[in-house]
Each structure stands twice: as C-alpha cells, then as structure tokens.
Length: 144
Ligand SMILES: [Cu+2]
Image (cartoon, rainbow, N blue to C red; front, top):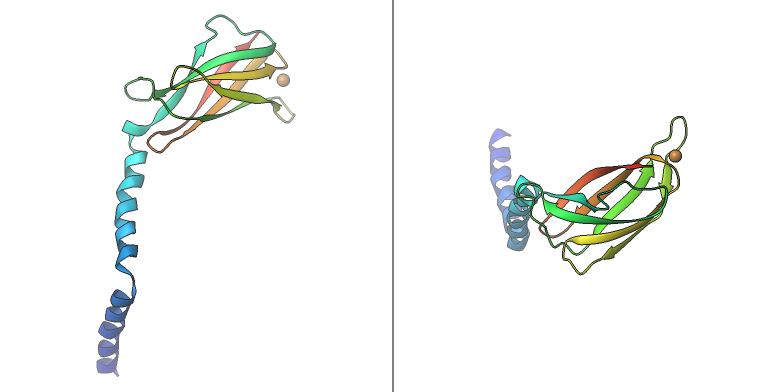
C-alpha cells in the first residue's frame, strides 16, 4: 500500500505541474512584487489642506486639498481622490455633508466644495487610489 501511494503522489504532482498553465504562475510572480511595492512607504500618499489658511466658517465652503508623497512631501499629480465630510455627533449618527471634488489647474490639487452645516470639528476622510500612489488619511477641520 505504501509503495502505491508513493507512486501515485509523484505522478499526480507531475500532472498538476503540467496541467497548470505557465501563464498563471507567471502572473502570480508578477503581481506579488507589485503589491509589495504599493505597500512601501515610498508610494504612500497623503492629502493635506492647502487653503483656506484662515478660519473656516459655517456654511458653504471651498477648500483646496493637495496630494503629497508622505515621505518627501512633494506634490503627487494623481488623477483623482475621494473625500467624505462628516461630523461626529454625541449620541447621534454623524452628520454627513455632500462633497464635490474638482480637479484644478495645478496637478495634484483639488477643489472641494462642501457645506459645513454646524460649527465644530469636521473630519475630511481622504483616499488616494492611484496606480502608483495609495493612501488614506483624515483632515480635521475646525469650523467656526
Ligand atoms: Cu453636528
């Protein structure tokens, strides 16, 4: 019985090796370094508030956000970002305000149009999903 098993095993291993297309193993070895690359700090982006520098008032607001390389701080010209605007409320669901995102003439900078319906702390959750750069961070805005 033992002999039969040891014979069957190598054969079935060979069959698996033969039947599996070589392209499959190739794509696997190609994607593995890629995911590692995007996970490195080198390609981590963060979104920062550029303007207004002065205090932000309640109501309609226009902000300029900039995508930066987390390490060098240099502007990263990504195509688009995602931003959500919420205000945590005690004992209630957070307030959510609509966010419009427009690209500007400056690569890596975006105009954000939103409405802060209440004075206090608002959180802008920004996400960068780019082929080269990825990142997620929160910008805290104190609305007066
Ligand atoms: Cu509120």
